[in-house]
Image (cartoon, rainbow, N blue to C red):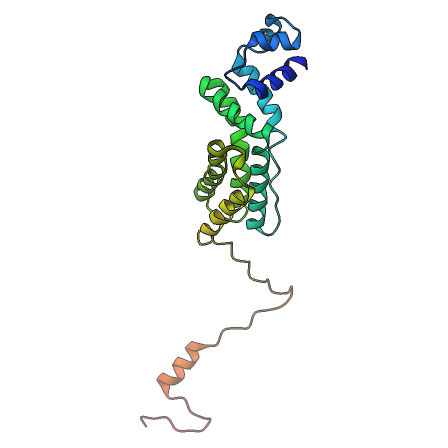
Length: 220
């Protein structure tokens, strides 16, 4: 759509603060009312563009038998995407748009931040990490990657994101919930369990001083 493409191009050129509905309309060759018919505000238009781009950044979380490798790979991929020119610009615009309009902020959280956190949380839950701990670790990993990228831009390295992931997973090693104990094997059909020893009979013998047949009893 011409309006979306014009908005995306102008965001990369001017940033969020330099974008106006008038400028987008002129670039797209439409009237302002056409834009307002579909988007009630500038932040709403920007949110649609950002969420469309976010789909290309929200990488699928790997799910192998090595949780450390999975999270390291995921964090590195996220960092690589957010430190490209386009990805870094998108992250900064997303942050600025979220600060301006609460409805836009809620949409961006639902379409960008929350799926990222849930990817990490669900992967940790699969390793029997307690729910509260998994949530805190997911927040820490996402914040530990995104905040430095906002501060440092494209100079942030993929290796730092991977080290952050390794550090967080290592801190969880002693906090895993115990795995359920395996059920005991069932007895084969038709088999019978051995009878327990007759401990009562043994006790009677001790009380009566049992002897061999024909033997004498004490006390006579």
